[in-house]
Length: 277
Image (cartoon, rainbow, N blue to C red; front, top):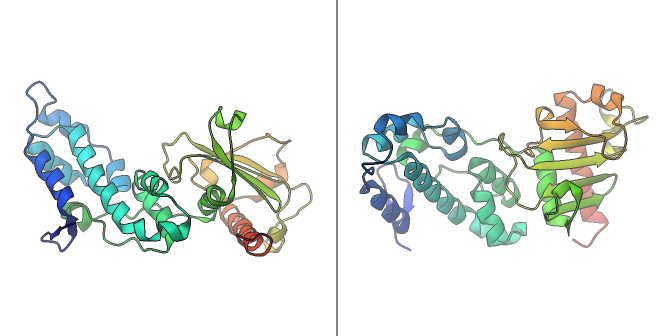
């Protein structure tokens, strides 16, 4: 596929440039939204999730484009660039091309996860030079989101369970914990996502070295709304018994992050030493 280098030095596949050119030639329909309506339609999340800046949006509105066409075209460019960037690492990470597209379709959060799983760094995004100039850093992955990704890779696919409302999901039962995640990857770090990742553990062997940890009465049972892996995103649950008040008191944001790291260490050790995978 031929590629073109723009003034900023970013490489654009020819097919993507053609898509953007076609959009630029499509004026706003007379019965469509006004320029003010287009400007009002900008969402601040576009900068964080898709690296689409307001300045670039305003320029497109001024050219007579409709808001729905602006975001669709920008997402198409972002996703295709993401696919090209991470495709070489999919086999190593155990992804299918369908999985890869699902991650890329989540924007910068998906890119962050792909980077952590494939080892391919997130470089200057192959999107418009205006967006790249002041791109917002993608939401960082963390130990819990990596545990969710590992669950999809190593877990068993199960369906017709109340948690998944009859839909497929992935379940990982290893060491002292059970993790269940939605079947579609890439939901992590999306603050608006309704997807839920669920964690249950009655013991944390590697947490014993953490300050203030006491295994007596310890029980970690929570639903992670949006699968973001932060203390703010979790909702305490009593799915398998009454959640320990001691656990709630001990798990401040720092300890929640540290506990996730310990669980991740345990899972990595488990799959390296107790299975053939």
